[in-house]
Length: 156
Image 1 (cartoon, rainbow, N blue to C red):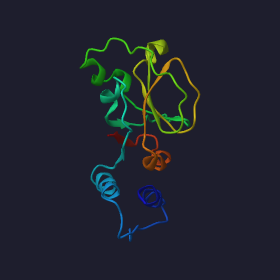
Image 2 (cartoon, rainbow, N blue to C red):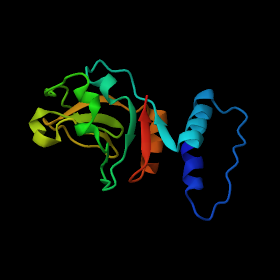
Image 3 (cartoon, helix red, strand yellow):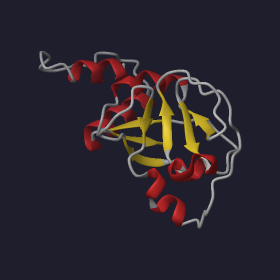
């Protein structure tokens, strides 16, 4: 219901959207509330053993020069999220195929792009320069196409 409602709200010919589902889940209600208060999309990630997981959680902004295949976090490779933990290098690990909803981070093999965080919008092949960290849970993957250039999204 959340993705459908947000899609309708983006339509200039729609004045209002009413949710009439009496069985709406608490989680979906939380997504509506978060979006209404912050204008940010809330995306839940699956559990992961990646050592970089905690570093990608939080709020990101999709770059203004949006890509068609991925959401690209605007400031990820230059941000404090890596400097605060004194990470000098992101080593190559978990370089796997990247189905829709995969959260990735570019590793040392990507040179100046090391540290860039992305979320895949289409299925992408394995790339030795890109570490897979986790995936957006299936229920939230319907939200991904709604995130446009400059939109913020929060990974939890």
